[in-house]
Length: 263
Image (cartoon, rainbow, N blue to C red):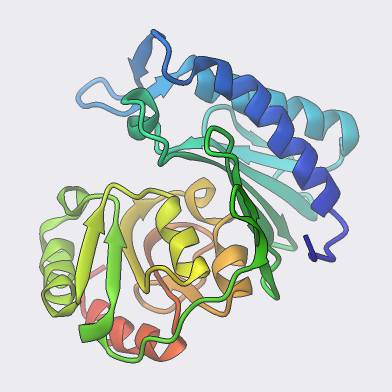
């Protein structure tokens, strides 16, 4: 892959370590726990094993770097370089045997997302970006990612994990967008952003996201020529309400609608 970032070779090592820890548990009879007492937020041994493997490699290789992970929290997050990890983005897909989950590995430097990869080891796909370029490697070979032009909402393919997780005012805004779009698809998790970067879809609209859900994906979307912000146009680095568009003109149209939603 043609990424020039200094930490890209190490990103590949993290991807291999997480895959080795996670894949033995996919489509097996493993226990599923919930992180919520009053709801269902699943976590498995695979989530924990994947993040533990990446953390161990980071701490061994770059002991002065910080880590922010979904399963094991924070380490040295005041460091210049902070790795942001989601071992299985799409655990609900993972526990139901669907290969639409992925491992997210992102790097923040001086507080800004600068490098990211989405790894789907079962399918054998990797999407990576450094904000200036983005690449795919997998069964279809290796190629540069380029988001496609789409200047009108009526021509757009919009993706979201599930409209049911949106709050009422958020759902109303999303429904208005979906009603104008050409096509909508659900259940995509991290793959949605990679499909925008690859030029197969045009728009992702989500909410309630954490930093580990987005830091790896922003450099991929931006590296493919797309835009990824909050619903009000701010940096996506802290998560929250997120919109990603392949075409900057489409992004401006969508922000006009979404920015009206009360905070």
